[in-house]
Image (cartoon, rainbow, N blue to C red; front, side, top):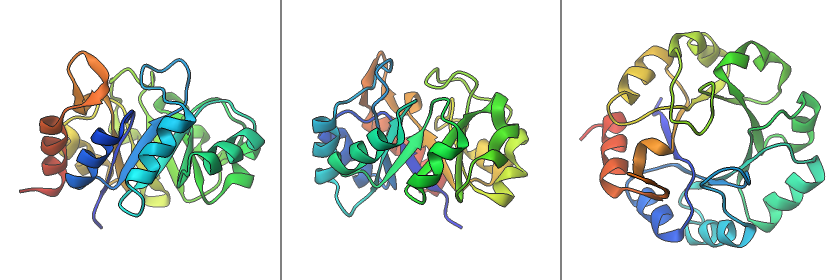
Length: 199
């Protein structure tokens, strides 16, 4: 199975289009206010409209109520939501199948509490660019459509994939312009995709 590629923290149309042209399958737009990569609904909708039909647009949210998440998904034309806060399992249920839970590696034992086919496991400090011991999710990848995130870049993603055999890999800081978390570097995006797909 071909591993899917998600570039997260995209903040503008130009970067979204560039990622799609390089072969990325999904674009993440971040609505978490504390993130340096946060966008508003209008920015997210502009990105979604620009790549409609070319890549999945995933909205990253944290600790919103279900009604707010449904409203956001519709207004920003999102294909899917990634719940990255401390949402209880029952908050995910009414959003399925167009949502999935993201867990820190330290909380991976709780994955069975959350429904749906998909699950994401991030490093212990999401957004920090720090990875985790990938071997702890290798069994999980056999049961769920697993996305791994946290500290991935062109230099280590092949090893991460070999250990976990994930459904998808998720990158943010590993493909950014150095010193600017709001811009993606075409050279780094290309190298990341090639490390996964070859040539």
